[in-house]
Length: 330
Image (cartoon, rainbow, N blue to C red; front, side, top):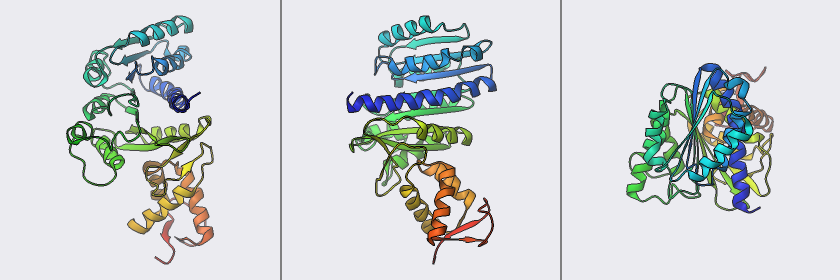
């Protein structure tokens, strides 16, 4: 397998694992739900088929509910044949409907959402733009916010945000981005588009440039679930994570117990800049502003306290959420 193959496997496994958690929750919440797969033709429909097979395995759950799958791309003829074959072999139930839409993800996704009745029902969008000329338009991502609740997984090619010219930047960010990190500007743009919680991680193969995986949602519980999924995927040869917020760009092995170095640096930097914070605030910071989980922050804070790098108030007792942490000597 090539490096690109390994990266594609990681992306598909993240998608599949997230769908396995999302679909039962969505159909428990409502009788109807929608899944939208953009750029469905970019890989010949492989990822869309993997998604459909997740839903097919939940046939007992889908029965009596309505789950709509929309696969959108430039030319979905090949994905349509692959999805039709998967439906036949998997014995898809009547509650699951699959539709393919040609004409391009940016041009047709919002129209497909409206035609598919995706407004105000649980909605998950998957937009893998690694093979596209550029990132999706902000209006395309914003259209997914019509779901209640809505969340979206996006994947961008290495350097896709940094290569944008002025006109393309307005299309993707909604306005000319100010100086600083393009990743942070993109996260801010997605928050403004209706997704208040946005996390990002780079997928790096063999030390090369990183593909940017972004998850956007309005629900803290969904973000926690995504972080659990992120660290639970199988390891693939040469593929590691990188936190866009880590100034040292440390590469992280995919593990249920990730290396704490980047989180240690980011927590110390945050405390130095923002001042003392409660354990709850620092757990929230780790969840929303880094690639780590809230539980990882607790472990790192305990290590920082043991090393004398930070102090706590009160000095003794359980490390509860209301304990205030400060940089030692600050």
